[in-house]
Image 1 (tube, one colour):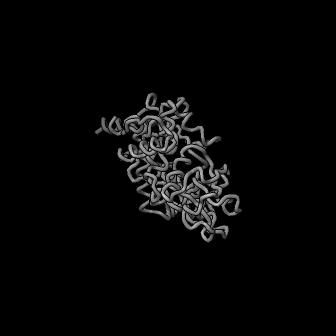
Image 2: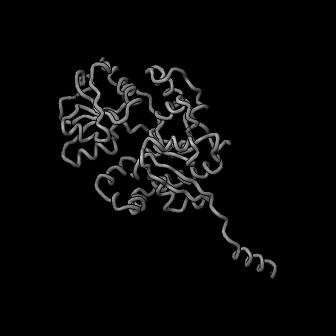
Image 3: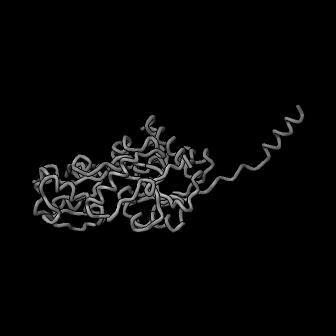
Length: 311
């Protein structure tokens, strides 16, 4: 009896094991798309996995994957379409998990405007934020309606997607997020409508993913990170109102109508199995980019994504 009491006393006196540190670079400022990450942090799920995760919004949204490739962070939130191109550029990156498992991107127009179908965009101006994949996506949608990419004028509107449509600067924008720009426009009294790209000829894909450098990553830490975010996603699905309170309490900037609406519209899109993936989805999008002329060769799926739980 004395020995067991002594052992318990020694255990109580021993310092707690130090948590493994990780740095996660976000794709943008914190918003409802990042719900599982923030809830995992606030509910202690990372700590349960022996992790101390530093969550860093980027100064430049284009940089997180490149910083991970350079070994300056463990993980970055990025986009499946971009990952395909970055790998072809030679960056040492692979998808290790999924955050948002459906496209959010859409072709956005005014709800009561003159554009009733993408066919009406012939000869019109279309805004975009980031050149590259968006052109392939837009081209696929337009081609379905007999319109060539050369039949429209592309205008770089930077990140002013909704406002550029509302002001009439452009007739449509590609790259708008259905959970944000649609709500923003409705709140401002100028409702928009989306043509959903996965219904218009573009293969479905994972909008937001976690990427890592396969040469330097710690697969065990990544697997634990994904287990924590999976638990957070389950909590969000089971407790949508309570999870919103937890998420929004982290910043006063999140406590507005736009974020309330965006939260509700994003809940059903979080990956329920962040570590799991559909190999066919990645193969199809790689083929799509090749057919669109964006890449000149086709990588196998195992060059694009990895199952860290099998490592």
